[in-house]
Amino acid sequence: MHYRLPLPPLAAYNPRMHELTPDVESPARHTERDHGGIAGHPRGLSMLFYAEMWERFSYYGMRAILLLFMIAPLAMGGMGMDQKFAAQIYGNYTMASYMVCILGGYLADNFIGARRAVLIGGLIITAGHYSLAFNTVPTFYAGLILVALGTGLLKPSISTLVGGLYSHGDARRDAGFSLFYMGINLGAFAAPLVVGWLAQGEAFKALLTGWGLDPTHSWHWGFGAAGVGMTFGMIVYLRHWHWLSHVGHPPEADAPRPWGRLALVTLGTAALLGVMIASDYVSWINPIVYALPVVGVIWFGVVRRDQDSHRIAAILVFFICAILFWAVFEQAGSSLTLFADDLTRNELLGFAFPSSWFQSVNSLFILALAPLFAWLWVRLREKQPSIPMKFVWGLVFLGLSFALLVPAAQLTAAGKVSPWWLIAVYFLQTIGELCLSPVGLSAMTKLAPAKLTGLVMGIWFLGTALGNKLAGVVAGEFNGKDPQALAHFFWQQALLVGGMTVLLLVLVPWVRRLTGETAR
Image (cartoon, rainbow, N blue to C red; front, top):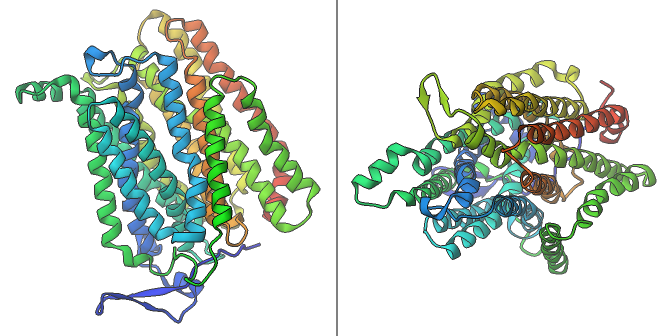
């Protein structure tokens, strides 16, 4: 069964007049004849690929050094925070970056359109990264707030634009999202290498000393480089703005604007943010919040009988899986960063490197494997695994990655371990990510009810938000001084992921019926 994507009025770019002019063709016909981009995909995908590459360069560059900067002693230019408190800030910041996607998606759907949302969000993110480049506490917190707000506006809209480039039954869709995901990871690969070297590299610190500058401020050079990356992203987006002339428009000028609902969405987002931040201090909040999606699955999947309700139930099943997946996976910026910095030999083949460089490994594997997965889904066509089975495989490889960390943690009793342990962990996580994340993005655009695509993308990113929050909470319990406790720390999470994998496997036939997929 094919689901209709609510595409906005179509326009075509006139290169001779340098203006937007109406196109008499339908959105479906436009996407069917558009093969001028990467590997025969719509050319708009090429532009979004590069714009998102630079946006992710800025985000992952900053993320690579954020926790390390917060816990570094004042004498080393850091903020001297307690590890648990810094992990809470890290979790709340990454949570907010994705939670605001609900509000951002609603704004794009009903007020400004996805194209403008990406532009405005990108400019706010740019301001946030440059704010972090200043060495003051107020600009540090202001920068985090700006990046979170801008990301919430940009992320759901840019994914919606990718989905809008394809017609309803276009077999290129999942492959297109995999290629888009490749652009994300090209930026994410380069960012820790550049930003990490600027922030932690001894050679750059020596260079600063030679310039007569304080080497302890190297962290802020790293944050500044993230801002430069975001600036490049906005330049690419504006230069090829016309390639998206047929998608991402706001509602018609005379259409009523739902200001009351906007206020409710804004208040709801702010309230949920407040509740989740309060959960750092009130223990009973988390069980209630994480039980609500389960109630939603039962209500929409069992009690309600209409097709849209069943789609929402399927979305919520994937939402629950995404929360758990990102709660473990996103410890790359917290627990695994601490493991790399304190317990791993940061040296490979005789070459020493900053600990933040490990955060490029996952993206390197994405770049190597994403084309293979994109080819595989197209090659298999109707024989490819169903969406829920792809999620099952994603969880399988994620659980294996943390199971592998158990012996690595035990070996730290004899000293720092080989970097190959973390490289193997990131390899397994990458396979899991490619089975789940780009497929999840694609599924949201296919399952979203009409006129709610942006909002559903916001809900998908809410799963990432809650997962990031849990990642921060869990990272606060990281104890690198006790090998047995650390092994238990990783084993508990591997078992939790394994339990969810078995449960989803049992539910695959039912979830497949909810999505409307044929049996496979």
